Length: 284
Ligand SMILES: Cc1ncc(COP(=O)(O)O)c(C=O)c1O
Image (cartoon, rainbow, N blue to C red; front, side):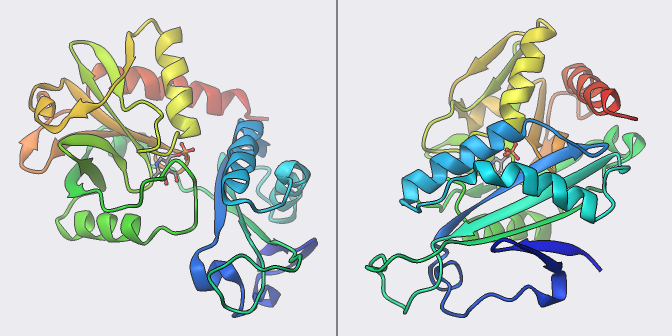
């Protein structure tokens, strides 16, 4: 039985109930965040909270998420996750409960704040070494996917399309550009350079994306943030997706074409080794 957080209280999951008038339920009017923890230690939580603050400001929801950092820690402890190699803490903040109307409520409403924590099942390295596959799907999202809103239906539909095509990931493509995944960022290695779409309004700027760019620079692998044309992928040496739950996932086939030699490449391995080192650094 898991303990969750709802509006200031830690309660059993089955007692966590939200009104049908919640604007999150009616309009997807809210944001969410997912923060990783390695051996019970939150990883880059300040960046996740800063992304929440920015998203809330964009939606004009009056809530300061800084107070949630301690709540993250409490959720890890309350759910016995401090001795697990990897866990995630999820938070969602919606505008709150109000009679259904598109316009914002005219009287002050309390945002609804919900959080839970659970173990992250990591992919065993032997499976990882075999590589994963992606299917390209047209990006049908709105123009602000840089805001991490709970309105994820186009992302769900894209991933479902990819899964039904037998792939692990959906590669979202708009105007011939490979943008990102349904719930992860996309990288290609082209001429030895780790390349990914710049952090514009067309993608969510992943915290893992930023971490992988930093790791690449530390490892003296050249990096480049630029739009990647879909047709360039035919000559990519490697490709991979990154994200809090995805970590670093190497892609060895996109649609019907092998990526590079069709095997997990040295850059993905180097980055995953460095990522694993970071995880191990937190081992008690
Ligand atoms: C569309 C999208 N892109 C990228 C990411 C990766 O972000 P992060 O690395 O912060 O988990 C996510 C995470 O949910 C996402 O939904």
